[in-house]
Structure formats: structure tokens, C-alpha cells
Image 1 (tube, rainbow, N blue to C red):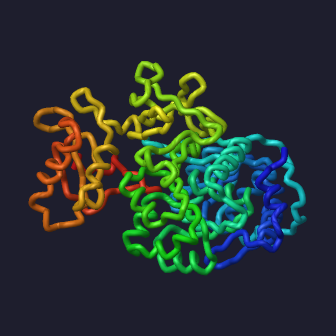
Image 2 (cartoon, one colour):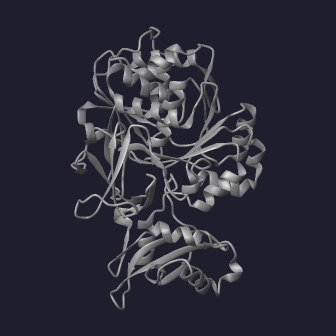
Image 3 (cartoon, rainbow, N blue to C red):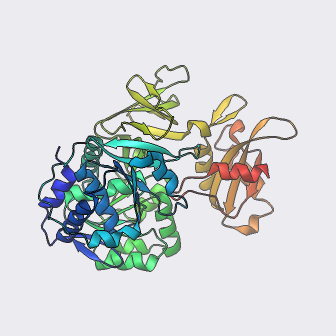
Amino acid sequence: MKIQFIESLLNKPKNAPFLITDNNNISYNDFLILLSKTISYLNNKTEKYVFINAEKNEYTLATYFACFKMGKIAAFIDPLSKFPEKFVDLAGKDGLYISNKDYKKISDSDYVTISSAEQLEHNEMAEIVFTTGTTGEPKGVLLSHKTILTTAININKFTGLKNTDIEMHMMPISHSFGLARIRCCILEGCTIIFQNGFGNLASFFNSLEKYNATVISTVPAGMQFLTKLTKNKITDYKSQIRIIELGSSPMSSKEKLLLSNLLPETDICMHYGLTEASRSTFLNFSKDVKYISSVGKPNIGTEISIIDEKGNKCKENQSGEICIKGTNLFSGYIFTEKSPSYYNEYLKTGDYGYLNKDGYLFFEARKDEMMNISGKKVSPLELEKYMNDISFIEDSACIEIQNRKTGLVEIKAFVVLSDNSLIDSFKNEIKIILKKNMEYYKIPTTIANIGIIPRSQNGKILRNKLKEVEAC
């Protein structure tokens, strides 16, 4: 079996820039040499599963693609993980761990320059991406070579990525989004600039300007952080930036429109999906502005159906569980007893939402995050959307709680105030505004001011952390 990503690497001009990091500018030829050395290093390793410490560098990527060539299955481990061995041990004696300490050995390896993209040993499975979901327990999502290739091709068709593009890659590569962006760039022959988030804004703008970068891939929280701390500085590059892809967490309509106004010449694309079903829908902020509050329409090769609690297909605008089928689906779970759940051929996602008459998907919440208030379903995202539009609220999050006196289930809202002069009146002000826009049962019973909303690395609200605060 031929690995198309390696074929693409082999076909690129050897002196063309491939990867730019803090310390190195690496050409396609440089990377092929490193890939060849890594293949040589792994050649005497009999383990089937290679667990890679996912530092953002050329060695990590070389190990990843060397696994493809050799028919091994790659699995990235978050470099912030305190106990990588708990992942490696899942494979028993069939697991090999590769980290920074092995890179000197790889660099010193004798090698024969790779000349073919054919696998040395056939294996249709490519990689494992670990995800914790809402349970906190890691599970391995197994992806095939066919799935990751088809998904990358379809992403590039939607975004219009070109071989002349230079991408500012802002995310970890231990997660589905960051990893997929690398594959997309390799297929087209782009240059990738590795940045570790927006923690160093000077480095970001220096690279953006020095290398004339045309693409940014990041999570919504990253762009919000950038625009908040630098005001409208990003608009200085509005004619330079062709594409922004966002994903991994929701974004309000207000935030989407704000970003569109700052970069009117940029194709800002946002996807919805799961590790198990990457890039299931896409939304283009300017072209789909009529449905800006949605998460877009199904991507090429993907179909979506909405079902109710009895397993019946929902009508237009009727909320239910989002189910997905298509070329982007995973092959199954591994290293866990968990099994995927299906509706006919559709993967049941555990997400709640609805489709409108034009086929746009509106995401409401994780099914297990939906709040049940007096028998009525309430989406925390809907409530947070209205609260975040209030001028004196910087951020918000909602959870379901039980009133300790009455035993009734109620909504509690946590807000971060941008105007502390309203500290004595903000609760009433919020309720007055919400009552004009929402049904009475959706209004929070309790509202608390909090310093910061806890979020994951990808910007998702950590509602369990808020529930822990509430329980104290």
C-alpha cells in the first residue's frame, strides 16, 4: 500500500521550505533525510504501537511518518502528560515510547534515503488519537490511512489551500485538529510555521511578517486572546491572510462577526466534528453569514441525521442527537472497553442539535451537558450566547445544579465581569436582559461572579470544574 503523504513529501522540490521552528528552517530534503534516519532507527524495533511524545518539532513528525512507512501504528501523547507510561502500558510488550531522549540516537543513525512511499509492512490502520471525552478516562480512537487521507483531501477542497501558502500552526499536535492541519499542508506542499499558541505575541507577529504567512490554524480562544490583547493589530495583515481555520470549541455569532469585520478579505472557516468524525461540517463566515450561528453544512463525503430519544428521525428545526456517517469516520476504539453507538450506519455522537431547511447544522450542546429544567431541555450554549452579548460580561458558563433546600433542579450561571462598577447590580441587570430574549425557564436562578471560566487547552468549558466549585 502506498502512503500518499510520503508520496507528497517525495514529490516536493527538495530545497523548498517545509517546517520553520524556533531553532530551525527545515527544507523538504532535510526532512526526508530525518525521516530516512528515523525509519532506520525503528527498523530493528518489533513493537507494533509507537507512542510519541508530541513535542512540536521535526523529530516528532519524522517518527509519525516513519510509522506509516513501516506499517506501525502511531499514537501521540500530550507532552504535558505527567504519566506517559499509562498510555504506553496499554499496549503491553507491543508498545514503544519515543521521546526527546531518543532524538540523539535517531540523528546519529545510518540511513538509506527513502525513495518509495510503499509500506514496508502492510497495515491499513495509521494512528491512534487519545481523547478523554466527558468521562475523563482516555480512550484510543483508531484511524485508518484511507480515512485520514480522504479527510485531508476534503478539507483542502473546502478551504482552498494552495502550495504557495505558509501556515501559522498554533495548536498542539497530540489532538485531532492540529494533526490534521499538518497532513493538509503536506498534501499541498505548503510551508508550516510551528508556534506554541499565542503566549508569545511578539514571536507570532514577527513570524507572520517575516515569512509572509497566509494561513492561521487555531482554536477560537486563541483568536479571541489575540484580538483582545493586540486590539486591531491583526487588521494590518488583512490583505495577507488568506485563510483561517478554527475548531475544537464553540464560538458565538458576535465573535464570528467581529473577526469577519477585522479580516474582511480572509476566508475564515470553522468546523464541527469529533476525533471520531473529523471535520463533519464547515462554515465560511462571510459566505454563510445568513447562518452564522450554525456550525455549517456537511463537508464533502459526510452525511448528518438527527434522531430523537426514541430513535426516530427528527424533522427540520427539531432538536435531537447528531448522528454522522461518511468517509471521515474512525475505525473503532482501542485500549478501552467502550464501544461506539450507531443509528443504522450513522455514528451517534452524543451531541445535541438540529438541521434547518437549508441543511445547516445548529449545535446546541453535548447531550450529557443539556440541562433538564422542569422537564424542558435547555442548552447551556444558547444561554451563554445571550450572556456573552451583554456589554459588561467578558465570559460566561452555565451548569445545572440542585437547590439544596427545595431539591429542584435549577440553572446556575458563572460570569466574568468586564465592568466591576456593576458588582452590586449585575445579577438583576443580567436577568432583565435575558427575560427579553428567552423563555422564563431558561433564566438562571443563581448568578455568580468568577475570576475566570475554566477551559481546556482547546478552549472548551470545563463544566465539571464548575460543578466542583458549586459542591464546595
